[in-house]
Amino acid sequence: NAGVTQTPKFRVLKTGQSMTLLCAQDMNHEYMYWYRQDPGMGLRLIHYSVGEGTTAKGEVPDGYNVSRLKKQNFLLGLESAAPSQTSVYFCASSYWGNEQFFGPGTRLTVL
Amino acid sequence: GESVGLHLPTLSVQEGDNSIINCAYSNSASDYFIWYKQESGKGPQFIIDIRSNMDKRQGQRVTVLLNKTVKHLSLQIAATQPGDSAVYFCAENKETSGSRLTFGEGTQLTVNP
Image (cartoon, rainbow over all chains, first blue to last red; front, side, top):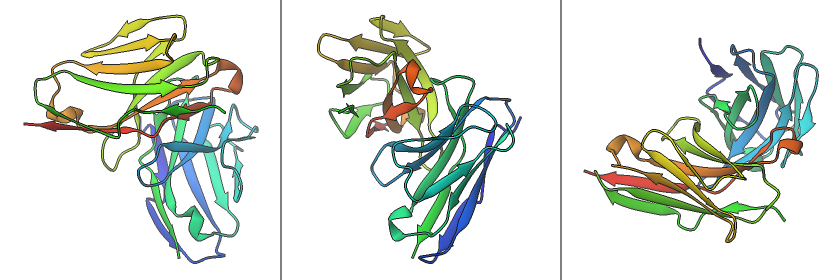
C-alpha cells in the first residue's frame, strides 16, 4: 500500500495564480483532512471530509476550496494565491479521528 | 477559547535517558488526547492516544499520563534513542467535532549521543 500520497511535492506560484493540490489514499478511509503547517508551529486544519461527497470547514478555511468526488481523493484548491498562503500543506486520512495517516507534504511558496 | 499548548519548545536529552514532554490543555470537553511525532521533512506520525476518562496508558517505550485536575498531559519516552529526535505534538479530539484534531505547537526533542 502506498498510504497517503500528495501531488506535487513542491510548487512556486505568483500572487493571484491558482492551483490544485491532490491527495490520494489507498486505505479505504472515510475521513480526509487538509492541514497547513507554518514554521515553528503546529498544524492547522483547513478543510476536512467525513465521506465521499462531503466537505466541511476547519480552523483556517478562507482562501481555499476542497472537493471529495471520490472516496480515495481529496483536492485542495487555491483560487487566487496570496503570500500568506506560503506554507507546507499536509493531507491526512483516517478510519476514525485519533490515528490519522499523513502524507509527505507539499511545500508551497507564493511570491 | 480552545487551545492545546506546550510548556517547552525544546528538550535535549542524552541517549539512554528517559524523556518527558509536557502539554497543557484548556478544553475540558475533549474526549481524547493524542501524541504525534514529526521527523524532519516528513508528515506527523501517530504515537499513542488516551481517552479522557483514563489517567495512564502505556505503549512500546512510551507512556502517556493525563492529569485532568491541572489539565496537563505528558509523554514519557523510556531509554531515548537518536531515532526519537523529532518534534512532538499533542492534540485533542472531541468525538462530536467530526473527528477533528486540534494540535499544539510542538516540542523539539534532540537526543545527544
